Length: 223
Image (tube, rainbow, N blue to C red; front, side, top):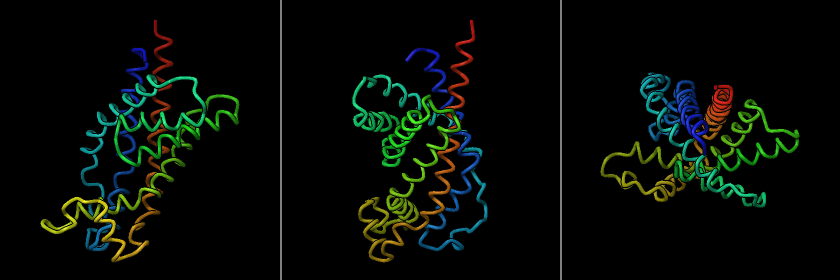
């Protein structure tokens, strides 16, 4: 990856990360409170849902910048004219290099695959808004299939010190939710999570694509 591409990925990733946190942080707070074992109202309801937004947005800029820089760099290293069915594996490797979480391993290969399919159907590379739509679908699907993991993580975070759940064993936490609340408990908050992350995928990946394209265009026009 050349210097303009390096800088474009770095800045565009930071802008995308800050943008999505500024807009969607309150929805994530609501989702967490819906998943709380105390219940939504006792966990705080709608009170203070904007608390901590500025600091979170500032902190997300460097994290998102480094994620996308790593993602694009690894994609560049792995780029070959391989069969289409192999490409999602390369995108999974690139995503895992940037951030090793199950959500990214689902979202990014699906995002890239949807963009490639749309590009093929349209006969040209997708525009930024089309990339954003692909990001929304990919984010919503990834959100749905990883909700049980998110519920377990929330229970661990909110568990009382010294309890078995507080030990941090995700499988144990998921089993505890299954025993007490069944499938509905494992997928608690799935629709707000899907809505928030679909919107987040639209903003995050659309903002990244648009900002990166603009920066590369400016770089090409500069002497």
